[in-house]
Length: 252
Image (cartoon, rainbow, N blue to C red; front, side, top):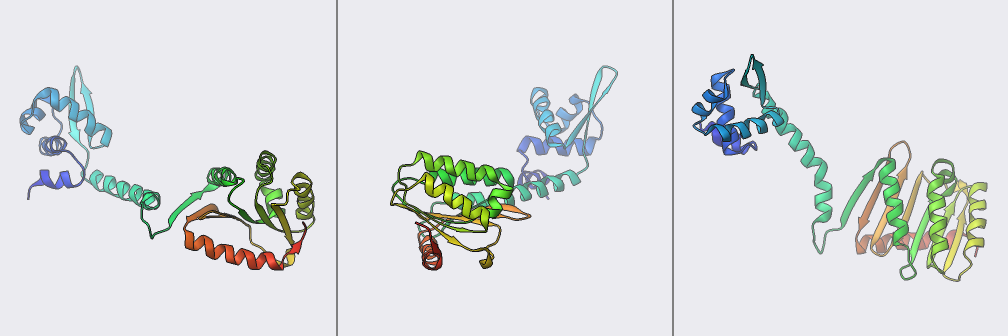
């Protein structure tokens, strides 16, 4: 078996593999012996040894004025492989979302408070005076847990002139007070808002539909935002919104 080729398949370079194998065979050794065993020049070995130390495959020990080097147990290679696999799995959804295909929807998921804030900023930046934004919100919950989200939204409304937005707001007195504030803030004919009483039991979610993008905020014990960019999905969600809109209480 060609151990050098096997180590290369695990992510090491040719020279890293040769020096690591030399370290395994020699045990604790000075640079001169390692260079001889690996059949490489000493300046090259110095550079590669540093790389192996960074990878956690080599350790350095000073005895008197002389430095000695030894290989870390090969199980470190397994640990490196597991780590790379986990990183690849974590990155996969983002890479898939970046893939430019005509048929597949682009899907992203943002997690935690920072992900939520990033998504809201993106959502509000998407609101403009051209494409209609459709919003379904549990305002009671948002006002209680994330009041900065509401403040940012109101600032966005102040910036826009008569934006084409329709909101379905669910909740109790807090939501009704919110509606009054928004109606007083925006009286343009393109901005409309309707109310749904708390009996309908919306979850701790928020949703924006604009263009081909549907952004769903799940804000319970686990906070994450699912962003799906798909023409067909957005069209379906618009249809569901229209059904809810038709049954909601008219405000303006």
